[in-house]
Length: 631
Image (tube, rainbow, N blue to C red; front, side, top):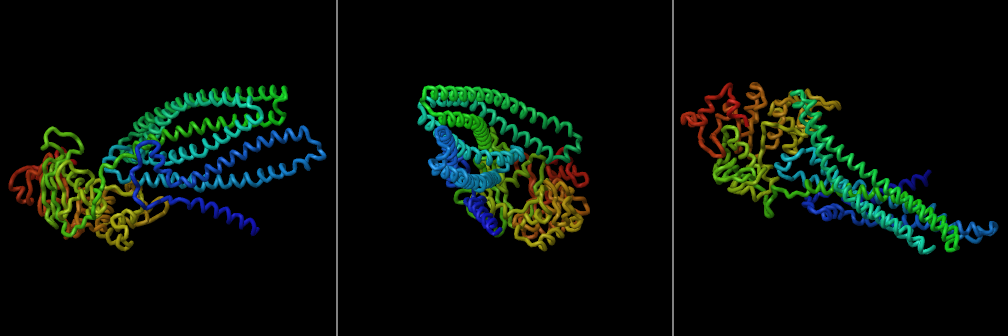
């Protein structure tokens, strides 16, 4: 028993050694991966070259040992044919013992090392590190990047591509190398028996390469299409699941069925084409293998009949051909899988290896906010679209100075540019022209993380992470204690309903999961959790984009006091369609078609009888008429 435990300990130590050869989750910021196939693969494979080299050497060693066993079988047949039973052991004892050690000890040990290098060193670590690096790079793409694609499709690309890179590298460096050594050694052994035996092999190899040359490009093209269609189908299904409340609200399950079916039918069409190609390729290869077996067997018998080769040569030649027949199927599918993976990787490159549109300047510093002064200087922005007139665009020649600690409300019709102005402050997009300064620091010259760390924001469309309540609130300050979280929740009037929450796993209160995008909570509850999160963040600049729109009047009245406390000492920009919620701001900015057309206090704007006064008159129960104000 102690010996068995010692052996288990040694094997586990070997496993751990290979598992620890590479750092799977490096902290260094990920670089942009190259956009060409070979460079992209090398980029992610570089840390694993030592392990890949070791596994390749071991694969070659195994191939040589296995081929030598076929040669030994041929020799054994010759020995048995000619030997005297009484002296056979004595004459061949050394070779028999050596081959026994090779089969029982050396080969299993080399295979143990090979399997350990592959399974412990590569299969898990390679794909996981690639996922980690690709995910970190993609996560820092611009808002527009994610707005233009399915989230599920992007995630699928990251997951598929990581496996594709790993399998491509391993098949090239190990499988093909193993097969190449095996075939070359077989040719050498055939030649040592009789050079003529190599002729069927050469003809078969030539025909095999022609077949691959014809079929493989078609496989590659289909595989690329399939990778894209597969991720598209996943994106469609995830889109339906993510918006399940909307699907059920409009009773459109049948419509979503059709939406998914369109994608699945395209996927199935691709699969049919792939399987047709597979059948043709398999039948062609089986025909070539049958011809090879017949040719080698017939030629071997003929050469034996003219005493050119021995009986043992026939045995190992036919045995080796049978082995190569099995391997030819293996080579075929490995080649198929190789080009399928290449197709997956090539498709993934189009998503993963894109340049980031919003990047920190090379000399970007950390934003230091001491007062909170915000200056918009001659801003021009049109979401990257061309404009005929420089004065056209979502934001056109806008300038605005917000004093430290000033509370500003943004008012205007839909499309006036209010939310865009806030998005530009957070640098979700880069300006076409102009500058935005915070305490005299151009936000284009500071890091995005330090910029957003100094701005707290509550939006109308509150989205929570599919995590616990406490994790969602603590997102505002990861170092906050549980007591800090509870205090913030109480200030946001969220503590009472949080205590009644319970998820399907039995977690209660602050430990309960809120569901994807916070779907288990009502709109008002999500809004209060979001307010608690920003309260905990306590940033010097505060942005409120319809922050209380999802609250009922009673709860809103209770939270107004908390918001007033939150705004104290901060520079505030608030957007609200319910004008009564921002009427008491220090200054109201009225926007229309990307321009500031009015500004002043509520009383001043009412007295001017302009757009603001018109909007105020259209109020019904405190809301702008929907035709004018929904944004």
